[in-house]
Length: 217
Image (cartoon, rainbow, N blue to C red; front, side, top):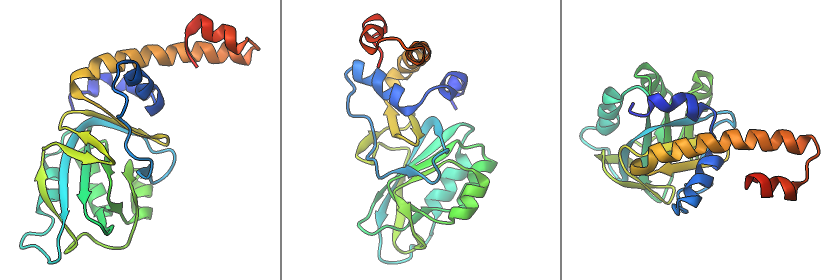
């Protein structure tokens, strides 16, 4: 919710340019592992991270799906759910009904290092869903939510509540909340610079001279 004011600029950004900016700021390991992919290539998501932590279980808990329901009921416009699934076997932490609930609360997307299911329904809804894979297995009796709004590690990257997460077909990047404003401003400037470089290169300009001029490649 707190990053909604940046939507116009973030709409024009992409994961690679955001990572380029963080590289220059010496935040060089901020990309989740490449196995976490959007269900379809055109899906994009960005927003304030709301975190959930799941662990493997062997029995159906007394109150199944309690954490997911509480988080979805409290989600705010523009927030992105980020889930760490600490389990060896993959099961679906996300599906069609949760996607409907997320849309009803104007959530911006879901990112998880676990699985998802109900592919057709989610794609028809066009709800941005980034996961490690698809599976018919429900999480019921296989994983259970153990914590929310806490630091987690998703796709090998630490995510704190309130960090900015940005996902597209190239991958998912995590921007620590303390540098979000600076990263967005720098990324916006770089996007505009890259557009100029593209035009000059298409017109036949030298790569060497263009790089010397703009420092962008």
